[in-house]
Amino acid sequence: SFKAYAKKVNADFLCIKEYKDIFKYIPANSFFEKAILEKLNLGDLLNDYERVLYIDADILITPKAKDIFSKYSDLNKVYMFNEGLISNRKKELDLIEQYSSKPIRDKDYFNAGVILFSKKSSFLNHIDKNALIYFFNQSNFFEQTYMNYLYRRDALNFFSIDQSFNCMSVKKNSDRFLADFIHYAGNGYCPKKQRPIFCELFKCI
Image (cartoon, rainbow, N blue to C red; front, side, top):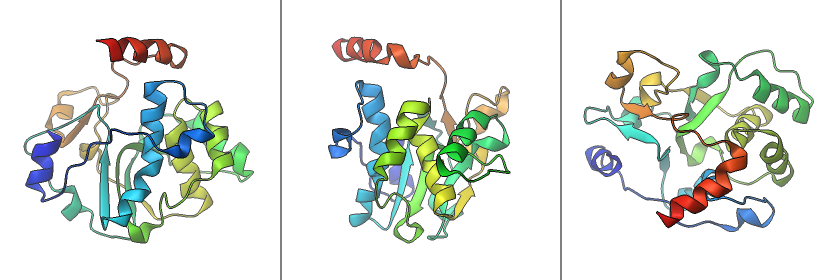
């Protein structure tokens, strides 16, 4: 479905298959954690591309999906779905507040399953080592909470995409299957302490 969509919107399709040196200072010990952390290297793609659309592997793109590049065309903005509008992410926001020592008075928390950004957005152009280590150790959604920290620290221009482009299982009705991008996050979820075991088994299958 990814390849078909890339062809439909006239985009190159790239599949991330290798890890980069970000792991020199992050104790990622499972396939899952390393794959998640690769999102933070997406900024490197902007050396070759003007815009990048990242999509999690647990997303199904439906055949009639609209062109997200055309719908969200402002190159200065980072486009992600504001999950905080429909789910409670107070724990993650509290972590950001504690690390930054700045009060948070809203519920904005963006999901990293679908990310559309460009060179002009100044997003993911470098790694904040100390912040990343902190969120890796404290958060169940470490790369996502780290991105939300950057959004607040740098006052980046984030804009929420429509839920149709990142329709997660929190939406429990049949409309979900009319979405453009159906996100299966949380289905078949593996607890963090079991991920190294699970991923070793997965690689053997």
